[in-house]
Image (cartoon, rainbow, N blue to C red; front, side, top):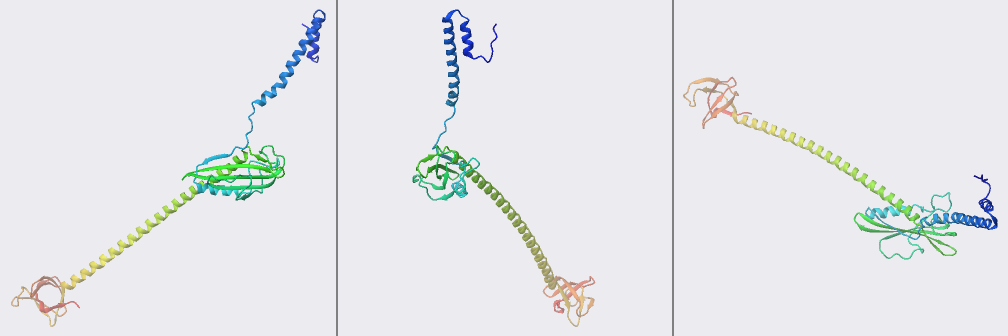
Length: 315
């Protein structure tokens, strides 16, 4: 087999093969074959990148972002207001070193958008003198970048949020549509704000629950202390009442001997025998009471009878 120098081109190789055939006809056939092979080669090289570009996704412009946020309208309004006031437009930049566009301001309207007539609350964030911001179609001049936010309630716990962004050149007044990067970045900031509000609300609810539990615990402790104090007061009152009752009973049951003294009788009549002489002021306890005579007990435990007129209450 003949060795082929790799530096020899395809055309020379085919021509050489053509000369190996007999006559000029074969040489001509070799040249035609070489030209055909070269044509096929360069066609394949040219078509390959075109074929790859056909499968590249085409970038879309001018599509609004409309989504449902799982939060009440009041929270979404608060989150959107915070993002509108932050002075930044995310998802775009003027120079490659920038992360976003700064020095944006909140606004009540923007001439870059038609009047909104579909209800809800509308916010605007605007930055003028922006130089060809990224992620807007075919921008090549200085102009104004504006973002519009529309917030509408769906129900008590869900809210519809729509975001649109456009760039308008100052000189040619051409309006350039966004590819969605600004809308997506601004929505992420709003969702982060909503998540922070939800977290704060949960923490507040937990804190309020703990506070209420602590108040309830203190109230129960205070009530127990008040109940104990009331029970103690009631007991003291009962004891005092019992002591007073005892004193009253004692006053009713105890007597002293009147002057000049008396004889302790063995039976409730005057002719009964005397058991003992009792001096004036001697204390006795009535055990039995009849209309005229009292059966008494002396301090030394002796029992007998004394006429009621010979006794008087304790001083």
